[in-house]
Amino acid sequence: MNIMGMGIPELGVILLVAFLVLGPGRAIDMARSSGKIMGDLRRSFGDVTSAMTVETMDQGTPTQDRTPDAQAPGVPMRAETPLEDSDDHEPPAENPEPGPEYKV
Image (tube, rainbow, N blue to C red; front, top):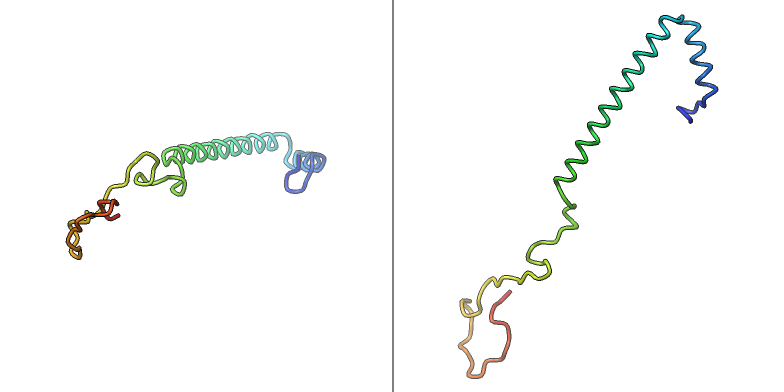
């Protein structure tokens, strides 16, 4: 375990010096209050993490991964304008060529 570049022996020395300087009563109070602070921080981070998880579940997949309904497999594309309704059309030929009936 390495906290801010200090190992367990260095942390032990710091705690021993703090115990000697503060005395037994205040050292226990400081340990208790620091434990409460750590518990509160852990709960807060847990709440934020769960809120973010719920938010990402509500959104579903990212936008770039979703396909629009018109391009989804099995969904036919809808014709926008029929050829016979366009303004610049020629009269129908006697033998029209087979082809699409609508412009896309």
